[in-house]
Length: 397
Ligand SMILES: Cc1cc2nc3c(=O)[nH]c(=O)nc-3n(C[C@H](O)[C@H](O)[C@H](O)COP(=O)(O)O)c2cc1C
Image (cartoon, rainbow, N blue to C red; front, side):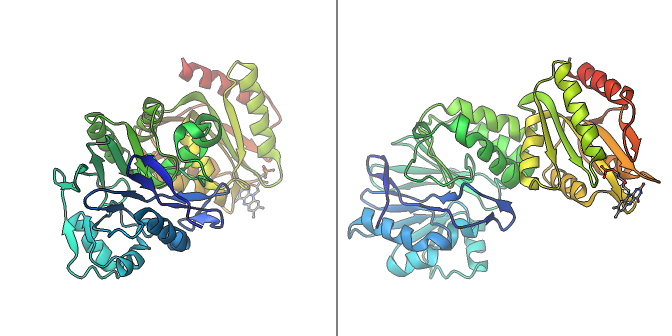
């Protein structure tokens, strides 16, 4: 059965949601599923904007057929060639062989590398170029590295719609809802949106800021991303979140505590620290065990909080491997501008603190507090924690 939604007059969502995929990009858990969005705009020329992942191709083709109702498909705009959006292109071209594919020159090259045959039907477009389909006019805007090099977005000037590719996307299946005002985004979606942005696009903050700047010159009435809800109001809320994430500015003055503990003593110190912080009035505190939390969640929290406490046992002469993995993720994603405190533990020769410090030193604008805590096997005095709380308080002023 087809499942489509009208986005605006003559503009339709023809995407699909996937609840079966466990790991997005085969790495990030998506317990709430994900949607792959594609759109059709009907006019003198009918245009499809992007395709979907192979997993939902049959549903998408049924949706496409339902919207076209026997009309021809004249144009396909490909904003981004990642296979979760490109994979169904071959099937579309088989059914609508006369459609011309509009994409950046880089995208057309990459489509070839993925093995799709465009048979002379490709039309490279660049920033400033337009595609008129009758009453609609698509203006192409380059958005390199948001989050691949070939990415472009397009602005349809009659309906004032921004087709934003992976920008403004989020994890989470749509399940019938399409617009941001059909869900409680701040309650149910923002954590997944943050986890999506920070893990998928997080490395490319400057490029995202560049796109936000270009978008700020446009009169936008709706934003159609490739994943998650379509935005038709309250743009400032979501744009402000992206401004924070892309500029690596914390959303919250508070403390994220991530601990790695084998037998529980480092964990106990982390919990004692959390209690002391809250008693001192710093109530925005989040505590995670690195061993049972997927790094994608920790990364999102690290982008959210101003202060991060890393507490790790020593393990074979270095920090606990899961802590190392988490820090490598933060480094890879370019997280910067955070205040960090280190808590280390070891039973004979503790090296976790130094190893964590070394990793952090390779990152930009990370302030490591002097008052780190060093314990041997367990913490048996309160003073180091009290000193750390004081230090954190001072740096929050
Ligand atoms: C496999 C393994 C390797 C360890 N390697 C070291 C080490 O290199 N140096 C050290 O001081 N302690 C080492 N330890 C001891 C733990 O770091 C120490 O007992 C732990 O920090 C205690 O805190 P916890 O209860 O939070 O795990 C090792 C423990 C294990 C299980």
